[in-house]
Amino acid sequence: MKVEEKVRITETKEYVIMKMVIKMKWVEKGRRFMQDRYGTDELYTFLLYIYVALLCFDLLFHNWILSIVVIVEFTIMFYRVFSKNKKRRRKENELYLKIKEKLVAPFLSLQRRWKDKDTLIYKKCSRCKTTLRIPLPSERGIKHVTCPKCKKRLTVLCLRKVKVEIFNKDGKRKK
Image (tube, rainbow, N blue to C red; front, side, top):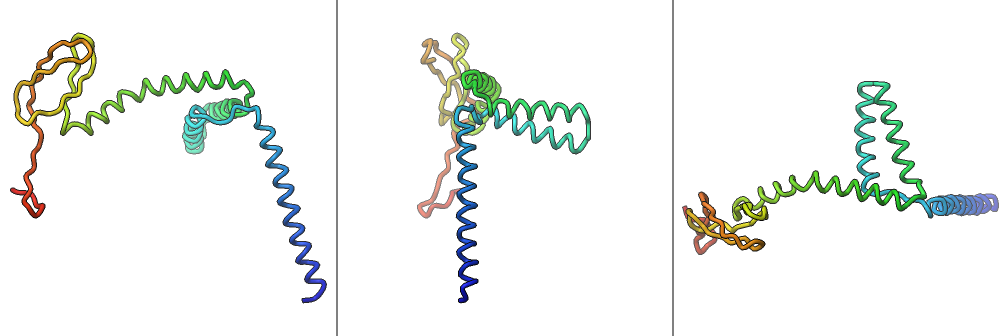
């Protein structure tokens, strides 16, 4: 190798090291800038999804009102991220989570009921409005259960029964 090539190699190594140092300084500046800021949370994520959806609609329909809404939402999102008032942002996020829980809870209940439809019956107590999960009996007919909360005796009419599958010794179903 010639001396000139060695100089070029060391210059490029030094150049790469210098670039890394500059990058690390910018990262550290960004870290210091965000140190007392609120940052992202679940409300931010929700707003981001709405922002992307509205942006797509705006690109499709080219509506100036929609463009203003997109800009306002973008401003609100980043105001929340860079805000130093952590207490207020936390309250906003807690309010969002409460509203989300109230809206999502019925769907989760339906999903659980659908999943358990082959093994459980759901019955609401007429006195205390508690939802009871009753295992399906092996026979159709009337079943009596007691509410664990108010101790009222309920009568449940079972029109379905648990599916019982019979297998041979080799693991195949009997027909």
